[in-house]
View 1: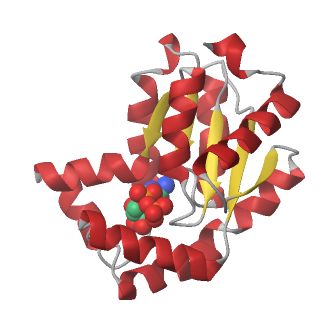
View 2: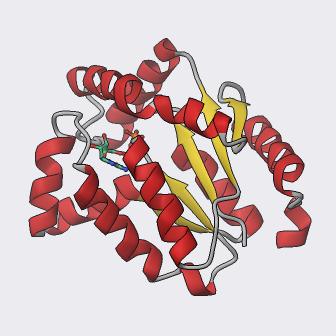
Length: 199
Ligand code: ADP
């Protein structure tokens, strides 16, 4: 198995690069943002709770988020080539929870792909995405708050994973294909997993 976290600020390109990782490595994708947006769209109880946080650019509380992740993971971990975690973990307690969940299930995390993009470019991308897709949290006020929350609560995970020698630093600016080529190179270096072997 190849279990990877795709890490980066909002707007860093996690969703775009996930699609390429799925296609090239046959991995399963868990995007916590997508799971939450589906609940909101379906009008579930969880969706109502999630919406009250997401619309303000805040994180969903850890205990709730960890339960959601466990549920998603249980459905797929047995019969997949590996998992891309996109948008999880976003806090240090979530990172610890991911480690213990994977260990309980007899698996481990192999690496963390860190997409690094300057702040003005992140803002530009999210405003553009808001215009193109109408995504509710891609408005100027919520974007500013999401970036604040990212620096305060999520960015510390970078040092956490560097300390664990799991972090792969990737320049998230450039063409989608060039960024992906760098990701593939780093994955091969870190885990020995090449693109062809997985296809
Ligand atoms: P982005 O990375 O562009 O912010 P996501 O789709 O990953 O987009 O997340 C959208 C929102 O969903 C976040 O701003 C947050 O409110 C909520 N969310 C997603 N994942 C998590 C998580 N792991 N913990 C807490 N909240 C989360």
